[in-house]
Image (tube, rainbow, N blue to C red; front, side, top):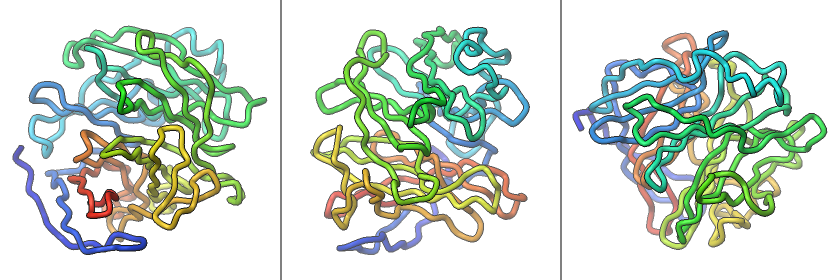
Length: 316
């Protein structure tokens, strides 16, 4: 890997905080992407993101070194016909993909919706090789309607300590949900759990869950507040943890994320504004987008090495 690593000192928020080093992946030009999810196949890094406004598909970029990125053809250059059955007025671009490897296949969850609506669905594609481009349509995973109190977007696949797959998802409304998946179909089985929400926030501004397991704890990262408005966005990333995948997830102060808790993890800086829609890879890489103040608020890919402090909390 031939990226330039810049070390700097951060103070991680919360009780027992300590100074730590952080390694930021420098790029010749941080590529435009929103809601990134990243994985490595062979010697190639693949990152999937929300499609560009008024264009069809899921955006795909790839790199051999993590520094120089190239654009691949979009997934879904044309909408799938069955989406209209559940979301008649969906946008042309698909949102918030999540890529994971499990049981010999790469699984790509994606969202179909329209801005501000909870008439939404999460769909699924899979393949034995990303590079092949041979994606199988595995259909509908979960949906929501305007009669529901949740929003079926922002799916994130996590494999628990026993090898059982789960899907977390949710945006605004009543917050973040979690459901067990059938390991063969990768579709929901059993009940739906509520694991994080902001009931005292006027808009319930929480979304984009990402769960990872490490050393006896499940760590839940979510994005608070609003995306998608360039440098006027207010996104920030918070985290909590639980010994059980279904919760309760508590922050460093012991506040339950189901009632608005969450330890601040990343709020950005003057250049990288409103970081959010994060992804965790192998417990040592942290991915998200932020709005580049030097490029008119362009949503851009940010990657850091991820570290863990002496109390078991993530930092970067």
